[in-house]
Image: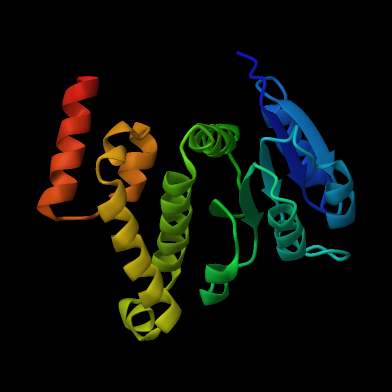
Length: 204
């Protein structure tokens, strides 16, 4: 089923850009850009989701992302990149961090669908989920000792805890997939209660 959302795919590797465009073109309005400069020429308020390579020869994905946020464009951005996540990602204003290769059309569809769902949430919930994406990306690549010793990561955990406290009621209304991602591997009574309540409501 075709969706009215517009997806901008940005990657200097033409083959990857064109492949991802083909995977999504039956479901979304697709635009492509083969450089950071071209991306900034094309992006405007009509773009809902950006799939953004991080390492490009003219303008980096970080520079493009900074400009998107500077313009206050209301779009969700996923970094789709071969650059392994390090603690520097804590400074970036993306919504999701996806490591290449994305080798399955369904995987890419799910990424875009999840970002599309997040667009319906208010800014605080979007922030919660973006921070959770950073935390998950780091936890997949870093051991517990590295994480514990990093001040920025500890600050991230503190901020997430505060946001969860503020938004615990809102979490009941989150999309199931986002909810599972947000509370993945949390063994507190609260997270178990939230998941249980969501499953009861959906009949799962």
